[in-house]
Length: 477
Image (cartoon, rainbow, N blue to C red; front, side, top):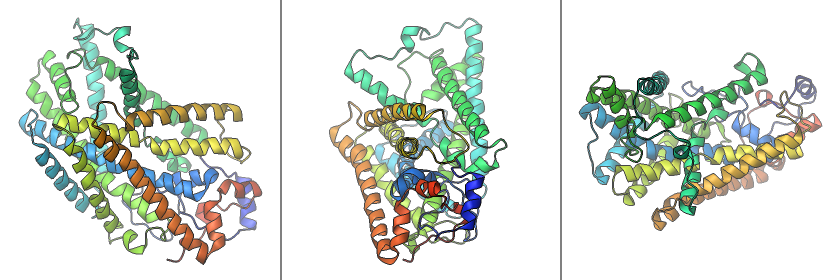
């Protein structure tokens, strides 16, 4: 969302103040395979959006959360690669010990880290092809299941209102449902980052809002329809995290006269391609953009130094070192790969709510304190905007808590992995940022004040300089 009107920008150009010492532009951009240069034009994104109403400290924390939640995403992605490869090569899931699952996951992640630091431009193509194939697979599943129902198939689990109604009869079932909502919300996670393409979209802000809303509706309908049809051929309660999609697709294939082994191998190819592409992309993209675009004084020049391929390779290997214990700890508390996936998928979905929580908070503050800032789009009146933001904040916060503290999980695992992971990582991020601000206050007090101050205050005074017009913001180390 662009917060400065054309008239404001012209006024700013006539009286340009000293550049702010904040990360210029979006930390999250799709230009992840091009080598950044000092002259590159930054774009406003998550960092600038949060800084608008809450200042640089909260902006950094939000940007950090985007990278941080990605660490847990690896823990759920890597074991799935082993499952998908097993179905591709054997047509079934080969049972491995937790030791082998962990060791193979670490080896795969090490290879992915090495490949991603080479700036391979083909990774984006692999990801796009894999995502397209998964979308086609989802569409095929829905169409074939509907065809089966129209052809007279009696659902293995009756599709009734009672079957689709959440069970709130006990505290445990209600808490489990709220935790599962995190998995659903995660389905649209990252959509807000596409705002960096706002200036490239014909129709401007309103067209962007319509596109995002339409995409959310489509994703929701796909989720709902696929979930509704999941038990047409397979009874409820017989599916696991690791083999569910293969069992269901195999049953669909058999109904239409196809070999279940052939179907599961095709599904294995599609999911393995999509997952490997996703792994390679997410191994490089968040670490590159986060570490290369935040103020250099926060982590130091060595860590964010780019190699000849434009990748902060030391930061990538630091990420690898951090992910290793995230892979090991849940393996200690799980009996098999299905238990492991239950732990890590739940934690991934819960932590994925942190960035949108902070973005919603920034929006709430914007509407409450800086609603007069000139911008091209408003979501209704001030009262309406605050009401919507408040409702979503409450829902997201409650779902995050329910997902972070699941019932039935060993207490030591919850405290060390779920709660401990969030507290340790966010605590370190806050301490590291305060270290940066303390040093900046000594070398340049005005730059430190500008970094911490919401940029909306400058906008209201007509003193705001868009990121593309600001100079190099990096303070001296």
